[in-house]
Length: 215
Image (cartoon, rainbow, N blue to C red; front, side, top):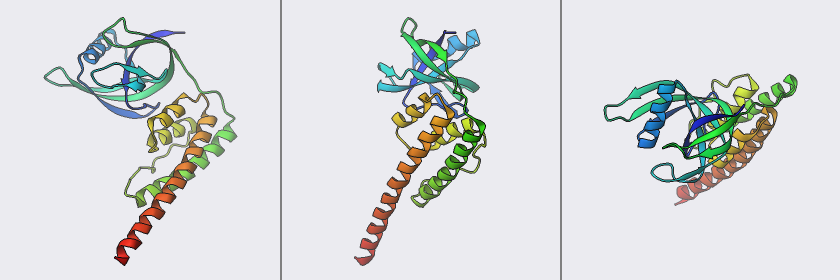
């Protein structure tokens, strides 16, 4: 069933099960949050495909994530800080500007079912590849916490997707995949790509260090 949902365009992708802090300061989003609080509802996060995050128009992607509000800190000047967590994914059928803020008529999305054995095998491969990825990143001075990877394949796919240091276009691509198995396979492809890039970066750094030592 299609429902209307307030939308918050961001230069970021919110994945299900992932937490995100938000700072609300623009008047249109203060109005949006006030309307949500009065109605006892929430809003959706959509990544910006083209345009500005602050002070101007933005063209968002059609697939986003419902924001579950865990905490609100009201500030004296009307601004506020939010602690949100990604809930269900959705697709926007139509956008509307009839309010002070963007809204959309949306349809909630669910992942296609994956055989448990296939999902478990893919999850194990992703966990191993991601652990190696984080270890390589640490050698380059970037610390990514991989200590608490979940076993459940769908949740794992979102945790790893959120932690990957890739561009927003790749994150959005992962969010839009409607199958846990396909999302895990795409993550494996990205991890292999990143492994090659990181290997080249490590070799370049080593070459620079050797050149500096000779000088």
